Image (cartoon, rainbow, N blue to C red; front, side):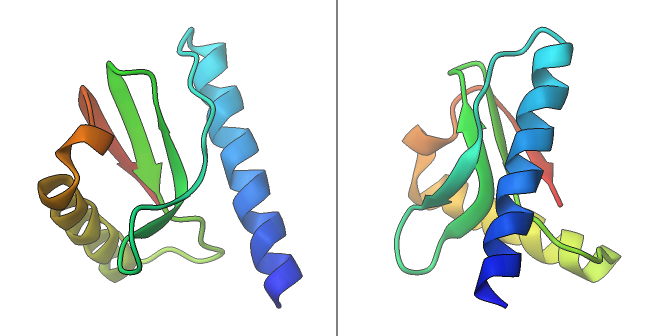
Length: 90
């Protein structure tokens, strides 16, 4: 299961980075662990835009709400890690 999860995260980060590049935004994303509580599968910033989110096989409104809440908490605790406009993704 761990290999599947790592592959899903890598694939999601590749897709997000490629999507952004096609739109003229150069941000490479990768997994980030801010501390033991705040870990995100997708994270990248160019100083003007910060992309953060989770890679999931299935997404529901409950998962999206949970990710948005966690990102909000992390932004308060680590404001320097979320410069510019913050885009949350699941």
